[in-house]
Amino acid sequence: MLLACDVGNTNVVFALFDGRTIKARWRIATDPRRTGDEYAVWLLQLMAIEKIAREEVTQVVVATVVPRALHNLQVLASKYFGVEALVAGEGRAAWDFEIDVDEPGSLGADRAVNAVAAHAKYAGDLIVVDFGTATTFDVIDFGGVYKGGIIAPGINLSLDALVGNTAKLPRIAIEAPESGSVIGRNTESQMLIGIFWGYVAMMEGLIAKLRAEIGRPAKVVATGGLAILFDQHTDIFDAVDADLTLDGLAIIAERAGAA
Image (tube, rainbow, N blue to C red; front, side):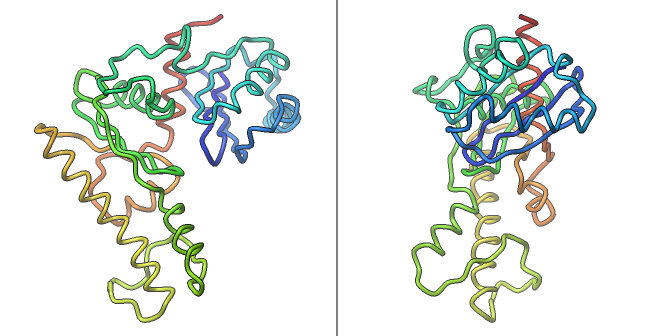
């Protein structure tokens, strides 16, 4: 089995693959100080609950946007699974597609992995929208070339900034407003309308501009935790793929081959 580790700024997602099928997945808060031993205590217990022996893991692949977290995951792979972790973008797991931007080395591993998966799973020109700590929009052309994109504050980050820099605005949950009206009748509803529908308008506007600049029909693929919520309130997405990043890691590991 393959253990795929997707390290984001907020969470680390672990997934066990049997071929291209996800057999189990777990999520833990990102903490660069967490040691390989601490990961193992947590992860091996969860594997035992699923009746998966550590010996079944024969390959580990890691993609991280938090460089300080990498070493401890490499320790986890070597000490507890007896394998050398593949690092997405490096060595045998180096990117095998063209990155057509001014600074190719600055492309985040998560975005590159999404590009790999999107091109493998969907045809034609693509716009990948990933809802994470930041919301990213990535353009991959019909030949699989990464052409660039957009980075915007994530919706929770925007809400944190709004609440944290005002004296009286309350903390609210991210959800679709119950009323169809965009005229809020109280402070909470006005905040929710501004955050939610403002974010939808931002997405729709940016995607329209991206499609116009691409100049050819482009499929929009959404991923990340809030993709399903937004998909219920806009028709801008052609596909919602919650496992896009994990699938990209499985593809990279498959292409790299066993150690």
